[in-house]
View 1 (tube, helix red, strand yellow):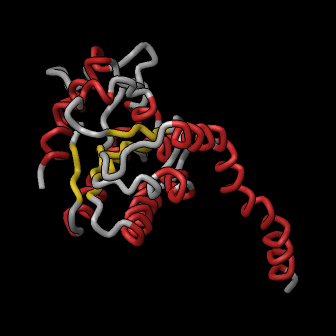
View 2: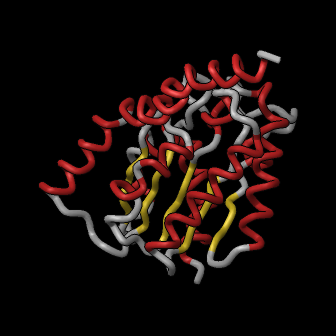
Length: 222
């Protein structure tokens, strides 16, 4: 008869920790976001550009402007981030630039942190919903999960995430999914090593060339 009481007491005791989880995550990236804001103040980026945002695959894309020399591009990736972080910083990272297109690369860190695929998909849908509430005409391009040697054991979850996000995008409007999976694999069915740097996770120069090739027609299409 006392179990409900103790359950309630335990939930009450844990509440501060549960509530603190998101702010703690947010604080982890505060310096990154503040640095973006400082850079914007000193050198305001163009409105109506192509905004690349998400995790380290975007942050490390140092040749972005060179790879798309004919387009106005903005890099606002912050390494280690999850889709929930992009949601948290939406009004400071995605919205202020009023981009015509957002390229989002995120979700892999979410799975690596142990989040269920269903939760990551829900977070993606929430991100789209919140962006569209303020930027109804923006095109959203999701850069799908690609296999990497380091996280090869996560491939089934990554492919499931790709499938569900692709379905969500197909049911929506003005969105596109860019598939990295098959083109990242070699004839042996394994991730092509030349597409990765020494950590076996992040893209090499060849890896970014491949992304550029796949993204360009999607970005330029109406």
